[in-house]
Image (cartoon, rainbow, N blue to C red):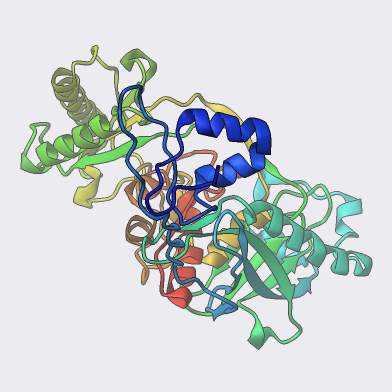
Length: 460
């Protein structure tokens, strides 16, 4: 018996196939069934009583279309805030690497008696000991170590927190990790940030560290020498998934006007979105904690403004509770505290959260590096204006430089959810009280990667 039916021959029956298997073995039989013997017609098994029809010629499947990729191209972007280098490896599941490099020039400063008049040390805040008065010089053997400690703090604080992913149907899929490194340069003109490491006598209060300079300018930073390796702690941090400042109310009024009404509607829209499956609030509503805090402008008596602010909070709490089907909520008032005559203080701050309060710690050097990358503070500091700094109220949009709209940058680049979780509040975020780097904190890295590759990546 031949392995296939030639011209004028019948196709082999099941009985023929079994006989061939017994006499010639499995390999020959398999070749027959694959059409490798004879003229390419394959015997097919049919139901009893049916006449098998000869199959057509076997056509090999076309190879999958190969999508374009980056090939051997490597990418580098030199920005005023950091350098980005991307070495593609791909396509997925292979993973490439993005390296962010922060170039710094460090200068070391000794403590002076003049610094004892700074707010951190002045008056009754600290009594200097004899040992501290002898401890003004930055130890020489600590200087080189300090640069290494700073580099480690930034690397550990910001590196490998998220991955980048490229999902373009017309381009090969790619992914990349993100390393963050610090390079010390001898020439301050080659640095993204010139860092002044300030020695403070051991046991003295902490110096307030600060990063200054425009968003696209060379920055300067003043850091306490202890910042890279002596963390600070905060006892009551809480991630709030929804924060809104509802206002402005009309002057001397607690009635809901069109502006407040629009704010309530926006709060409800966002709340309902977070209630959808997979959202932060996709839990029993009794597990969500709400906050309603009224405010007022400064004109008038403190007592009257406190009462007015409480009435505003109560009106908003009642309206939102009624429209969302919530239990009655507690309202609070801070009156005119830290307010001015600005109409923005005629408002109610509304929050919703499913996260507990908790104790967090923060590496201050890593936090300050966030300013070097372009991000503003996210912690609450209502009285900062009394210390010469920008006031920061719960629900504010964080800002490091007035020339740059950080909130809009994050929203446009990473998304609304990322921008929302970076609103000012005492949270575990690295730019607030803790050490968490959220997807939004990779915004400017992502913008750079998108620009040099001419692709639209996302943060995972």
